[in-house]
Image 1 (cartoon, rainbow, N blue to C red):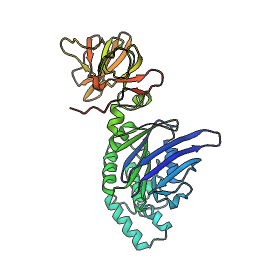
Image 2 (image 1 turned 135 degrees about the horizontal axis):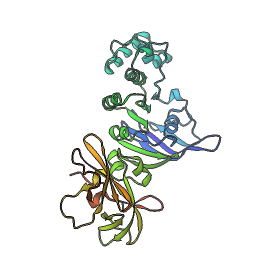
Image 3 (image 1 turned 90 degrees about the vertical axis):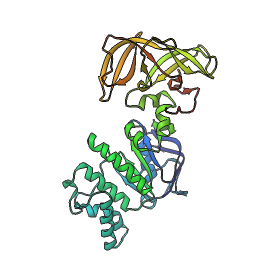
Image 4 (image 1 turned 30 degrees about the vertical axis):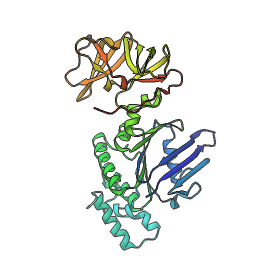
Length: 368
């Protein structure tokens, strides 16, 4: 196993596009690290640059403290699983798994033993003689993982390996992949555009946009306190409410922020009164109040309720601004109902209106 250190890394294409733009990153030994972002943000280019499949224009890549920036891919000690699995169609499962060992001229007996052992670890027993075309998508994915594991690399690189699976199989594969990584203890970098996958799998997440790092942190940190409005918009199964607001009171640690339909409590230390901000609050952290409310709150009328299974997403018109709030199943108010929404100050985030950066950054709140 080995850590990965990236310093000032840039990958620039001949047309001048900076796919990766001056990135600094450290992946710890044994860490499950996710590169997350929309299509075209540079995450796959970064992964391929670590692997040596894309040349670095600037900067340094180190694996296990050794500079591998100009080292050819086969000598970097990395194993990679591609999005389309890249299995050899004319080879059976056993031959696919042991191909990296064959290239290194490992003895046949050792290759056979490795194939049997790795296949057992990944529940591929009985499939060793089959060709890829005779396998399901989930089985092909496990063969690709088995080949990567059999190559005995120091680092495992995964390029959206679950994207070709259906929704149910993707959930099963997610659980399997996390357990496998924990059992192996191998340093893993996982590329995905699916924020649910990143939140579920990763020890830490790097959120990327246009080749740049927008936030780096644990899943809890990235979800609970997005560093800017881009991350706030991107992370979460239900979109974060981002509302234009004005700091109405900034006396002490907690003040009030005026928004359409009322006001919300917020940590306003270091934010002056009358400052124009963007107010961020996740639908999960808003509550439909019962009884009289005397403190800061939003008042509006229910427009629509969407069934999400165990929850419903209720959209409320607050003086012309639509605000989402999640409620438990079978408790959603009917359209046309007047409601009052409240939120704890610790869950209300303030962003600079111009830059979109988080203001008055505070420690991540602890769940009760």
